[in-house]
Length: 388
Image 1 (cartoon, rainbow, N blue to C red):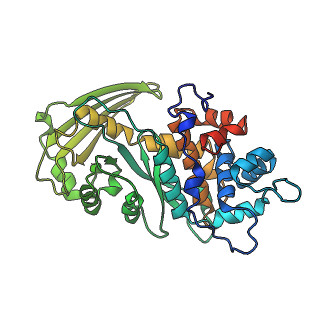
Image 2 (cartoon, rainbow, N blue to C red):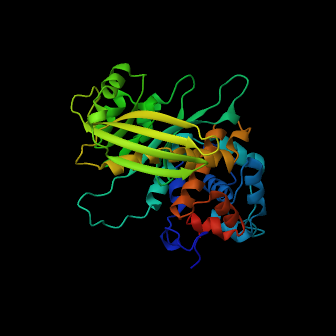
Image 3 (cartoon, helix red, strand yellow):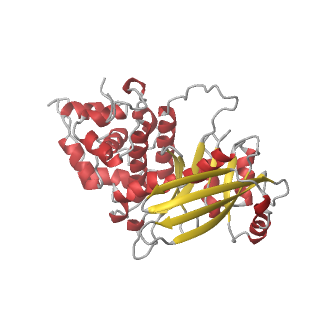
């Protein structure tokens, strides 16, 4: 059986769930009169096109127009009772649907699909079950800026393996903080550990995660002066080293040292440990040395996680930049896109999230190569989405 781009793909094709079952719950925003093409078929076609590398609405429409008749049938387009041919929507029809679709409903459907598509991990022999690490971070879609409105912002939750679990649009004239809890509301958080940047080190966020049996790794900076001083002034020199890693990449040599201290009186909900990370970076070209100290707090006790695990999760948080935001910017050229109307910027970002996540679940590490591979045969995106 052919695997999608890799002989070692994580999912067998027979195990892929049908995307249509999940997109069918997204309400069709169009007037019932004059609907010629089912919304589910158009959405599935748009997703399939993005999996083949389509970056724009024009490219999506061209892919649908060029699709063979049997592919259109698999996508859900009906045949004409007289001619037996399946016609496809005009580019304007595709655009109108994508710009009017409910972004929250679409992201919820995509999240449910990706979670259903995730294989159940094998039972580990360890006494403690593995924790799912989830990174939360925002991104501004720069190309969506207009003369009268700022560019939209999107807050995403991604597991540390590169699968997007949820997305939420940030309200205009606001920031990421109010969107944090709605973003996570549809996710199963029990036993998970959430990694965030300093903006989300908020008491309400900590209380929310603790109440949902989740844990956090929260960066502490000077925007919380009292908490920052409390953590910084701990006797770090007397605390033994917990973990040390060294890495040479990107023209620099980096050493990371982590210390953790159990502390039951931190002014933050559920905080059990304070963490100091010291990063020594030497630029191999200029030989310049920089030293950075970062402080964090966590609700995990010394019995919940080792220092090595803490170091891995802290390091893994920035995967949301490399595995998601960077790919959308460089591979899909998201910031160069000029779509601005209605929900289009968010919808296109959601389709890209879905494509990236499907490839990650199938064991792909090079998304650009995966797009090229999928684009060479019309059946490949259909198989990846369970549409055959």
